[in-house]
Structures are given as C-alpha cells and as structure tokens.
Image (cartoon, rainbow, N blue to C red; front, side, top):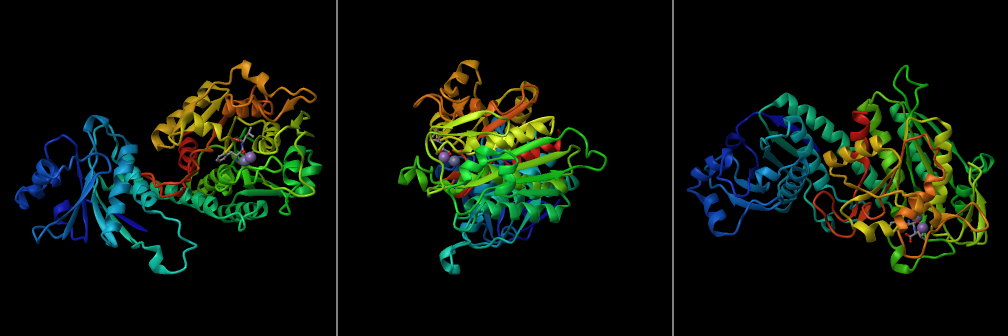
Length: 496
Ligand code: BES
Ligand code: MN
Ligand code: ZN
C-alpha cells in the first residue's frame, strides 16, 4: 500500500475520504473547527446531541455536501490531550482506517494531529503502523473474492506540517509494519503447511535476500551437537527438528560480542504423550510465534542497519505422538550437560530453548533475549494485555521496558527469586521440566531456562503465549496472529 506525505491544508485536499482528528473534551480546533463552520456547526451538533465524544478509536462518518473537495469525512476520536501517546494515536488511526474500509473507499487522506510531546517523526511512525497493522487481515485461504468481504485500500496520504520528518517516519513505520505482518503470516499458516524444515527454508531465503549468514542443522547434526533436549522433543514427528542460525554483522564488527535473539519454534504442539485436551490444542499452530519474531526482525535488519552484531537462533521441532516420541519420565541431557527429567512432554518449549540458550552462551554474547509462547500460566496471570518479562539484568530489563512503552508491544516484569529455583529441581536428575502444580507456572518456566544461561550474561525471557494469537479483533490486529514482539525487537536494536 502506498503512503504519501503532503503539506496541503486538509480542507483543500481532493480525496474520496478525509480523516480528521477530534480531541475529547476540547473545543474544536484546526481543520475540525473550520469544517464545522462550513457545515453550519454540524460537527458541534454531533458532539452536543448525538453522543459523539472523540474517545480513542471512536469514529463517525459525515457527508460534506460540496462544502469541501472531500465528499466524506471520518471524525477520528483521539481522546484527551493530557493522556495522548503514540500507542493511542496508533489505535485511533487503525480504527479510522478500518472505518474507511467499511464505507468502501480505496484511498483516504488523514490529517495528522500535532501533539505536544510527540515528535512529528514519531507521530508519522505511529500513523503508518496504525494504518498498515489496522487494515491487515489474514484471508489467504478464502477462495472467492466476495467472501473476503474487504475493500482493498491502495493509498493513503498523510497531511502534515513537517514533510521531511513525516517521510522518515513513514519509511520506518513501513519497515516495522511489514516485518510484523510477515510474522503474522508465518504464525497464521496452519501446521500442515509449516514444519521445522519450512521455517529453516524461510530463514535461508531471508538471509539470502538480505546478505546475512545462515546455517541450518538437521536432526543428525542436532544430535551430534549434543542438543539432546531439542532432539528428544523432535523424535516423535515425521517432520524432523532443525536448529537455525542467522547472523547480521555490520562491516568490521564480525568479531564483536553479539546480541542474540532466540525464538521458540514449535511448528505444532500437541503436548506429546502428555496430550493437550481438544480446546487447548486448537491454537497450537502459534507455538512458533517466538521464531516468527526472530525471523521477522532479521528480515528487516539489513534495512534497519543497527550498529551491533545480531544473531538469531531458532530451535524448531514438532511435538507429536508416535512410536518414536519421548515418554513422560524420560531423562535427557541438554547441550550444557545438565540432565532433565521430562515429567511432562507438554513442557517442551523449555526443552528446546535449553539447548538454544546453552549454544547462545558459547558465543559469548553481550545479551540474550528469548521470545517464547512458553506457558498458559502467563495468560492466567496477566491476560492478553502484555507479555511476561523475566530478566537477570536491570539495564537490559529497562531497555526492553522502554521499547515496549514506545511500541505498545507491552511487557510486565516478573521476579526470578531464588526460592522459585527449587520448583524445578529434579529428584533423580538435575532438573525436571515442570514446577509445582498450579503455582507460578510462568515463573517456573523462566527459572528452568535460567539454568541454561551463564551467570555473567545479561538475559531476558519474554513469555508471549497469551499475546501471540487473539480470538477477537483488537485495535491493532484483527483476529489471528498479532505479530507481537517484532516491533519491540526492532525498536531495541535501532538504538542499542
Ligand atoms: N505451547 C504451550 C504454551 C501455550 C499455551 C502457548 C497457550 C500458547 C497458548 C507450552 O508448550 C505448554 O504446553 N506449556 C504447558 C507447561 C506445563 C505442562 C508445565 C502449559 O502451559 O500448560
Ligand atoms: Mn507444550
Ligand atoms: Zn509449546
């Protein structure tokens, strides 16, 4: 979709649909005030009598009866001035863009509000992301155009004061939104069409296209490399496991300590012999959403050009039942030599990550961040409003919290107190892969992973199990995969 930038006054723009911002509880100003006069105080009337308030995401369509070049206007509520943020702006714009689609227009112009405390470039990023992410729908598998039921919007024009700043913002917003949407695509893909091999091929393609180094280990190599936990999780499937390594290094930085991103890449999770009940299994194609964050971020990295070496690692397997599948009670040895009793074959994410984190530490990284749809318990704790953040390093946690605030890919931090470590101590092995029944499940997953990270390496774990896929539309994402974590990661890398 084409997004242009112009400095034209909104009421002079010739467009099928003009979107203008309306503050809540504030006297009409700017284009809204001028249009109100031309329309004999129609907007004032809509606010005074028709219950329109201008709350974030509240839209209303008006017809302008030849008073301005644009035949229709969408009022875009942006909430109260004191509470404005880029996240709210993104949500408001996403709703307005869906409003344009609802009235079947193929292009629109949007007056970008000037907001105190938000730089014009930041505003343009938020608006661009709002448009692209708000309009994205996954209907690749609908076969007749009608049932898709969506008008395709092909162009938007942002009306701004600072054209140069807005152009920069649009370019960056397009980069992040495109990477996010790529991640949504992989997560939305059903598991009969994606396997560990498929993810590895996607990684190879991304690396080839962007000049990144790429390596891919098959099941034989995985076993030879002593990744006993990843190997065991993958044993039960006819789609064998893969370990994917992607690397970006700016010129002259090939030997610098890298930032390592690790993504859980279960192409499907039935639970294995600790089989999931039917309704818990339905969404398990999303169990590679952490891998999608890594692939999505690496797909944008050549254009982002961060000044750091970055390595993306994806342990990938399919958790199935068969004559070769691992059994509850099996003991496996991870790459760092620790033994794990597989008490529950459904706690497989921490097993494949154990080997990936052990390998990551061998590369002497500056920091490791892993993204994983690790536990149902994280959703019980905080629902779908944030992912869980677990970190061993304050500076790294701060960085992630700041990037989360800016991007709206929210995180909420949980403790890694020593007492929790007891929960995953093994009785006949070093570790067991489950904690205490119904207690601190997300933290148990995190402290388990901590056993595979060297003490002196800053590490953060992001449990995104509850936010990777949604059943109902949310402001920035239609039902389905959200692409959570991609924009967060790009924001982190941009200024690291
Ligand atoms: N992939 C699941 C976690 C999950 C749950 C992802 C809901 C997305 C939505 C993970 O492998 C899992 O099954 N975790 C278990 C751990 C338990 C057995 C200790 C869980 O959360 O029940
Ligand atoms: Mn599982
Ligand atoms: Zn899983």
